[in-house]
Image 1 (tube, rainbow, N blue to C red):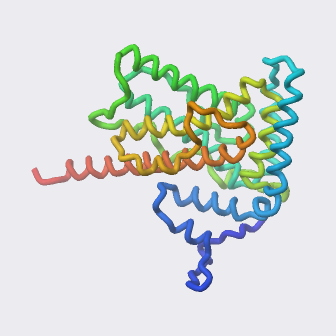
Image 2 (tube, one colour):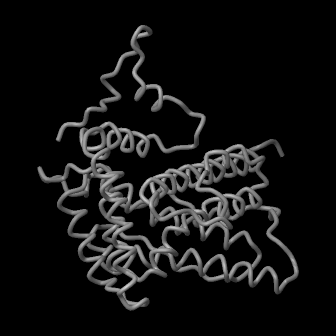
Image 3 (tube, rainbow, N blue to C red):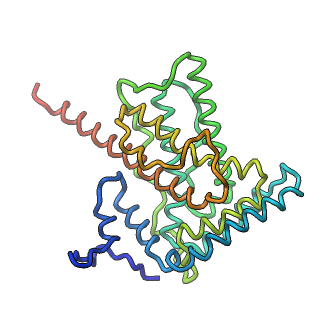
Length: 301
């Protein structure tokens, strides 16, 4: 399972520039180099090049057919425990290590971003962090809890702000204590010969499975939670008093205009990238604040 993307072995040929090298070297988007390397290795895999174009239309057709089947199923029927056991089994045996690592990281980063907003909002809104270190830990209904946590956080945050008669605003000093570079390790991910599926192909395959084992309400809530990327981005931009230039890359559309569930797989990949970029930005701001504090402490007296 040798990756096609080998950044250290790449050289620049002006007559034949490598697009993967250009994407890796570009620094316009806040991104951890290790994460970007893993993303590009996954994106340049044969699975994404040859299998994804076949899987994507079939998966979308399955979503349409399952929507019709759900007309004859009790509205609130779900089998979440079975779903998560199946997802964990599939991830462990068929998905590339880079993709599995990015999936586990996503829960860590999402939890830390919500913690950052809560710490700096001036409210006592509670959070429910999800920080799985292994694929087996996902069996604890982590995917479902991730969606529930996001909606519950936004509702509770805004209930508290409305009760105080104010909106979100930038604090005098930002609290970055919940932002870290810790999390699961890429080296710990499964590396069997069957682990060949890239992240986007895996997402497309799992989307109809997700729909099958959850209720209509659960699936609708999960797909439309992706449009809250703009909401979370705006919260963070307000707190850090940013100019919003990085929000241009958050494009899961307006939260008040629900999207079709057919594009859930592609939009989920966008959601993952937006989370990585936002967390990388917050980590950089934390480091800059620490440097400024150290400079003031060690300056002339």
